Amino acid sequence: MACAAKQPGTIGAALGKRHDGRLFVRGVPPDEGAAKAGLEIDDEILAIDGKSVTSMSNDDVRTAVRGDVGSTMTLLVERRGARMDVKIVRSPLLSPEQEQRR
Image 1 (tube, rainbow, N blue to C red):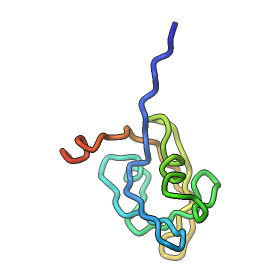
Image 2: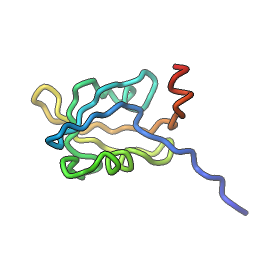
Image 3: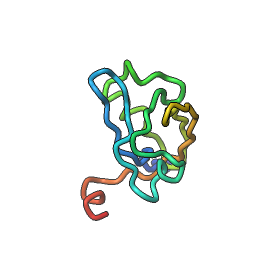
Image 4: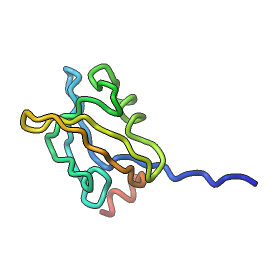
């Protein structure tokens, strides 16, 4: 018996990487995993599941935040000088058409 494919998921946040390799949260749509976990605009993401983001390409970051819907990941975040771990449950990955309808 074949197993059903799992639905692709992501953290549900818009991220922006600067030329110096620093990664920031640029948008947090409501009802997505990032918003539910308390991620905020301008949070700096230092690591994804223990891996520093400074040497990651944009594709590496995209791959790192994706996974099965309902799976969890941990981001090391710096907010206003304080560092914290933020555990996020991945939300369904929306198509561009679904994003526009929001």
